[in-house]
Amino acid sequence: MKFPKKFTTINIILAVSLVLIAAGYIFYRYPILGDDTIIINVDDDSGNFFVSKENVKEIIDSLKLDNPSRRVSNMQLKMIEKALEQQDFILDAQVSRDLKGNIIIDIAQEQPIARLMGNNGKGAYINKEKKIIELSDNFSARVMVISGEGADSLMSPGFMDSKVGQDFYDFIDYIKADEFWNPQVAMLDVDKDFEVTIYPQVGQHLFEFGYFGNFEKKFNKMKIFYNEIIPKKGWGAYRLVKVQYNGQIVCR
Image (cartoon, rainbow, N blue to C red; front, side):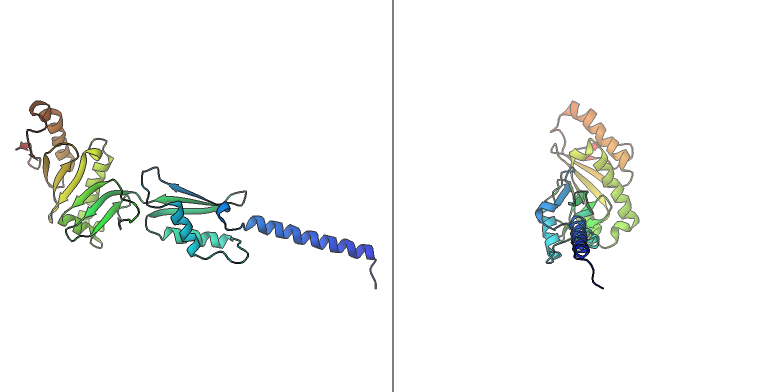
């Protein structure tokens, strides 16, 4: 049976139209992976700059997703997200697609609260999740420094999960959260028994803190030194202030 020529022509037009519609759908759903389709947002409100947009692009390029069609599937978006989250200093990565087909990458960076400098020459950060993370070659966070044998202990595997490690984190977190002590405490020198000497940002004096336990009472004594003793004696009157004794502040 032979179909009319007009009917065959209509079928061809319909078939071509369907192919074009399907191609348009694929183009929208799987955009080209190029600089103009990727929007990278790196959260640097905390003042940390461990990760740059260039770093993120390099990680994506290393995945070699630029196949001949250069289309990005939902599965590949998950691959990008997983690869980013495995990188140092990336705390969280969210990869999605907006209504225009752009690939949106939102990066949350690690937030160190202290830098460790051990006697063995090694260094690291403690982050807000109580984890030890390596130092960065790209950026140095402006945070309190912890030195001495105690810093070596904090960097040892599993120590932060111990009772002493957890309690010491509470100690430095208290300093970090306080509006006065956070900018004033520059360094903690911690010995093997976790007895602490505090080096302030302002002044030539040191605080002999003793064991870090009962830290709130000891910080209250330090405030008495600043609020009552310094106004009477002056900033240069004492070089050593001992606050580890019950009911006493010893100044020398």
